[in-house]
Image: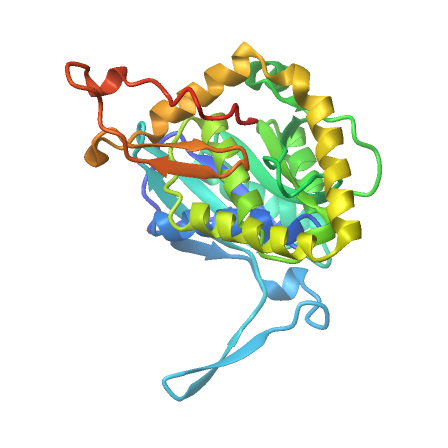
Length: 322
């Protein structure tokens, strides 16, 4: 039995996990969990024994100096708890680590042991993969589950994948076997610009997680980082004619495939995000996704005689993709 000391009783806890390595293109998923840990000042309450799961010739420990004292940091997986207050109090159990080198079943069982002791209601695993997606368009994020009832209830895809899998797939299946609802959210990262970081993909994962769990996550510097990332990739693509032509081909294919999806449901979801993102301290400002899929903040006071809550989204904003 796992004994947890110093962890308070949790409110509607959900476990959110991400692992560096094969499941983490552009470090988008692990960065998303790290961002939440920093923004909400997470407190680490447990760490898995590195000796049990990692090959140190593959994931080497690092040496650093602390006030003249030589220290070693071992690769491992850590668990922390953060409390989110908006729109209502809820606790997240954050799991962040490296895909293990061995004993995957024991690794998953240990994580699920913590989930059981903490009363976790659902597990959400974040991942990122390389795909034929243009960097100039909103980042596609796919929600997948092995539970057909959960797929229907949360409007997710039911997993039909067959082939090699990583720790994300194994952990999701382990959750299913023990009866814990589990979802994986996958961001698609352009394969021609796969090196980390990819703040645009990280931001897309956080936005989808907000929608899934009905909560609000402070974005910090991610929107600005995402815009700077896209500008940098634009400049690199402009310097290579073949890359520029390839990106244009991806854009045309993406736009053609997704034209029918500009539905009333997509518009309604964006309006809900607009309402969540409002900040009354800015005099009616709001954040919405622009055509590049990156939230842009506008500070716009309401017209005279109109209440702030009645201000609609800017009609000139392009329809973003969810």
